[in-house]
Amino acid sequence: MRAAVGTIPVPRARGSDLPQLRVISRESQDSCDSARSPASGEGAAPPSESLILTDELRDELAAANAALETADPQDILRWAAQRFAPRFTMATAFGPEGMVLIHMLAEVAPQTPIFNLDTGYQFRETLELREKVRERYGIEVALVQPETTVEEYEKQHGGPLYRTNPDQCCYDRKVKVLYRAIAGMHAWASAIRRDQSPDRANAPIVGWDKKFGLVKVSPLANWTKQKVWGFIEKHKIPYNPLHDQGYTSIGCWPCTRPVLLGEDERAGRWSGFAKKECGLHTQ
Image (cartoon, rainbow, N blue to C red; front, side):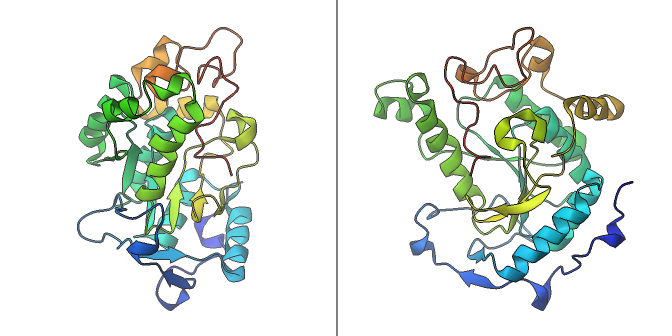
């Protein structure tokens, strides 16, 4: 039985009940100087305050995680938005799970800012989903890009770095960009599932992301691939047509291939390397 929103024992939402904040000047943000929140316009959160993991907040997150383990993803997103907005955001690569969360956010918290880490290497079909999201839901997904273009980056490294050092390429064009994108935010939503990879197997529904220094909410952590696609079919949610061509997990085009019969769904990522994660979801 799913948990009802009213039973979640973490009602603090705003005002004096917010956890202690530490003001960080732009000059002191080593990886976030020139940072810009994906939120813009009315209601946007200024990117000048960082959330501190106090004992009180740690206990609150543990209680929320336990209460929300069996909750519907919509209830989880509703709680996160009520608790952390306007400092709650979502990152998406427009995968099936991400499209499901966008659909849900459009219903329960449509003002939530959503962004995509645009590495410069994304498939055309992936970027076309951004327009479909705008047409279907009226949501403008922000594109957050690295400081260098692909041409500049490859010139700096004497060619495509993904061929020889994909870890560094992912760090430069995804991880560092995420640090900038979430500056000033207190929580972010991720579309990961526990059954996708060993690194994700123990992902909590709600927990502290020590790598990026804010709360991470994973509403689909306990969903399966079958449940995700069932939801997509039921609600006619747009998805990347490459999935119909054997691409079960889609990242940057140079590092993604269709999977073969009997391979796991992430086998097509960084084929030929032991690497299975870009670094966003590893601690």
